[in-house]
Length: 129
Image (cartoon, rainbow, N blue to C red; front, top):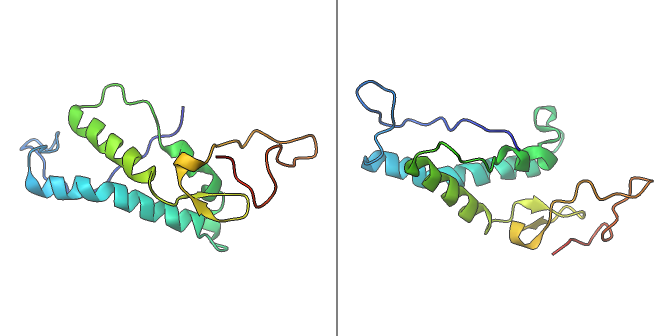
């Protein structure tokens, strides 16, 4: 479930350019910056003010965080875990009032509406914790 995305960076690779040099200090700097870059991108999605190219991403970006990690090397698993750990502490989820909250304090309930399309849980300024 969820869509995958590509991490494009200036990684140093093996001679055949097939693998990232996982022990290289430069690559460590890059991997440490990936969670911050993703948080920054999410901030852009959340602050979308009439940018038609980003329309909808405020609601859909969580689906890009694929939880299927089968087949990943320890290197990429570590990056995935660092992304999750970093985002769990960041103010990246908008509540119904438009305020940013930490994911640990919210639940994703896009399906929870009554027959009239109104949220079942909470009012426009409430959030589920």
